[in-house]
Amino acid sequence: METQIKLTQYSHGAGCGCKISPAILDKILHSPIAATPDARLLVGNDTRDDAAVLDMGNGTALISTTDFFMPIVDDAYDFGRIASANAISDVYAMGGKPVLAIAILGWPIDKLPPEAAQKVLEGSRAICAEAGITLAGGHSIDCPEPVFGLAVNGIVNIPQLKRNATATIDCRLYLTKSLGVGILSTAQKRGLLLPDDAAVALKSMTTLNKLGEVCGQLNYVKAMTDVTGFGLLGHLAEMCEGSGLAAEIEFDKVPVIASLPHYLQQGCFPGGTQRNWSSYGQKVSPVTDEQRYILADPQTSGGLLIAVEKAHTSSFEAAMQQQGHAFRAFGRLMPQKEGKPLIRII
Image (cartoon, rainbow, N blue to C red; front, side, top):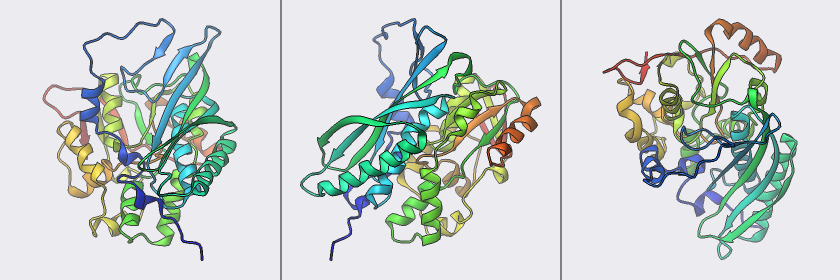
């Protein structure tokens, strides 16, 4: 009988929970050496946007991004699907249309068979096909732990480009996927995840954020980003700081996977949650343990965080319903006030 390979046993981290914490990333990105200016570069890394954007000189822009991580599920095919959906999401988060992908593969050839890596690539091709693009090549190395992801290019009409630093006062906040896949993945590694919840997590992580391309065509969508390893609070903090605003969240309106309390009672929360909180918790009003575990939970292939002008929330919700989705606002953006937290939870 063929032995079933469990990929998560070969990695120290899982999915976007592998990301370097925001505080450490700040130190890595800060340099006294000034970047070489490029007048064509519309978006670099100065505002922590999801991708770089280059003006092509014809009214359109090239979106370029990369994302990769270690397994968050045991099945190789599903690992390829999840990692690919996560990488392609960065293009959607800029309001763009993905056009091409190449693979990034690190494989422990002394521990795992090449057939398993083949399954990873097959899963990736399936998601790329769903996005309407080709997995056109890539690069691979012998690596101590399995790693997979994509470098993805997209295009966008420049007026439709969305950024995370362009929100305006009184925008309403929406999230397109429920929080909690980090908690469920931790339960999986501990052997506590129920089959129904494993299916919920897999569906969430393999669902493409195609709504981002739709949102790119809506002028009243003022800012957008996707929620991944820094958790909702981390990515919202980036939106607030980039836009010079503060946020208020109604916790009871935040979309959350229904079964999370069952796993939180068993202590199932990833180590990345505490790393996230240590990086930005001082920017947030006092919260309960449950709120912290959920709002700072590292998401893998998470949903889009969307800031919509207050006067157009009905139009936005109607546009999303036409796409088969029902969303409600869970928070709002407001002016920053000295001595007040950047993000307030009510």
